[in-house]
Length: 111
Image 1 (cartoon, one colour):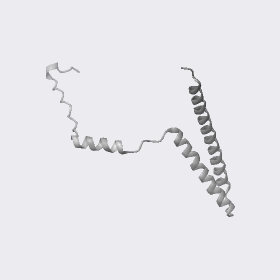
Image 2 (cartoon, one colour):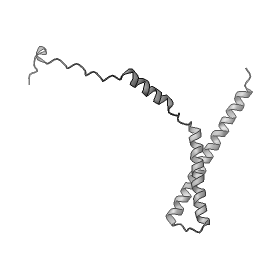
Image 3 (cartoon, one colour):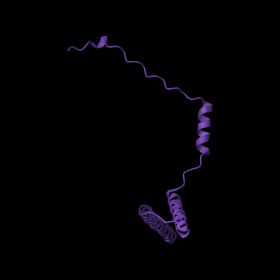
Image 4 (tube, rainbow, N blue to C red):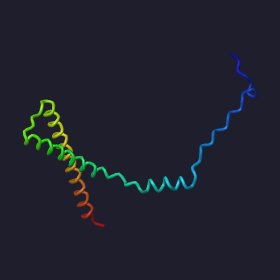
């Protein structure tokens, strides 16, 4: 199979120009992004997760106090949730402890 001579090849098509946004559209998008609340830090999300797990466990325990019986699968899921909440609480306490230790070390540093 022979290749055609270089001059016989068609010229490449110019790249299609991307549609450009107007100045007003760009400013509105920027204002919307600036108005959106920032995502909470990881430590805050961790503590929110611990609080949500505590609330779920309290709700289930309240149902048990009112006489609701649970199946074996539900009890196993409850045990897993309690374990997960305990692990998250332990992690949160370690993070807080490390932060406090870092602050103490920074305060005690001689300048």
